[in-house]
Image (tube, rainbow, N blue to C red; front, side):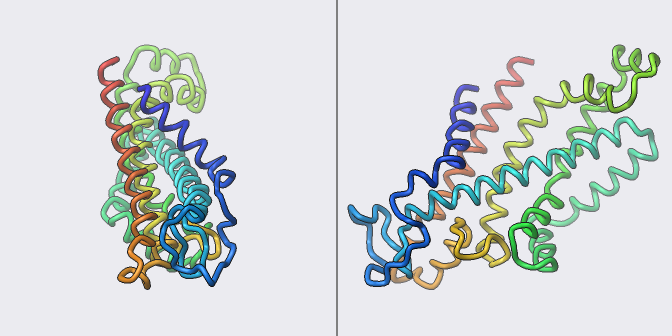
Length: 261
């Protein structure tokens, strides 16, 4: 659990203060020093326009990690509401919500997000909408399953008999029971959102230039993959490291919750 908290604090600090740690302006052009190797002046080298790679990676954390955080929270909210409607709304609501969920699950998330982003056009809002619309289903299934088990407990039945509103029952009885499971699912959604944002950025549907985003940095470096492979290695390594760290932290969090249960 301690490692999860440390990682969460690190990512939060990186999103908020990462840009302040950048040694150079991420968009400052320096054509005479384009494609420079790592040096004391440019620790990770420069790109095809002479921009400092390290500075762009640090500024890119605000886009890649920040947008992934927003997307995963939106997916969490949509999925939790859908799952609670299915659990509390009766057989018809349950059947409708689960069929909708199964329909969305029938399509690969990234492929569906690419199609939606392509229809809406490139941009940050299109990216957020596409990834949020295709990432809520796992939350819905977990919320529904836990909600159905909570629904039969005595304190919930008593609250219903006392005439407590459905939203109040969900707030005080369902959500506390859902929180541990949804937190574990959210870590996986956060990692998938980072991959999705980077993938859409690499395909040209994500954050638009000159804003530094890890996927768009991979796209810019693709032309120089043979002559300067480090340009692709740095952002790719950052993406892989973040996703791996989040997934491992999610596993540790799941084990900790299961041990305490």
